Length: 79
Image 1: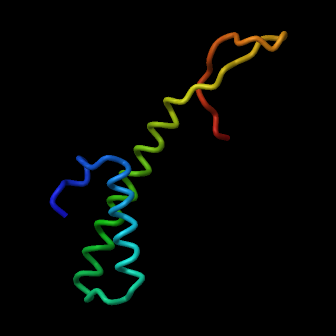
Image 2: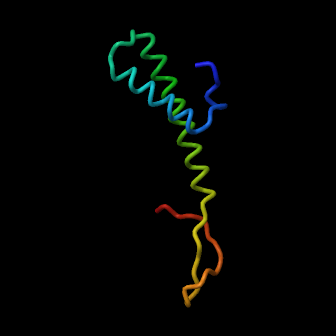
Image 3: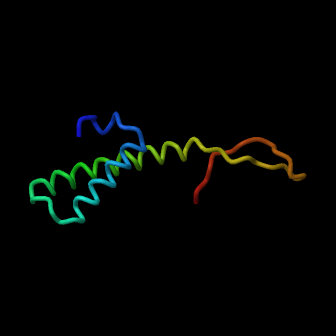
């Protein structure tokens, strides 16, 4: 891979992660290559998770007043 993981867009990182999974599932990679792919995949998964968490933190939910009209926004709560 030519582009550092930190410089990849979320979509490109996810696409690369999918390629790695396909390669590992095929069972054709030599042991050293499989280990390198696994490590790269782990790093990609971590970066994708960080980007999703950051995006989720930016999402805001619209609060409604007692009459059902928008009354402001509050941080998104996925719980």
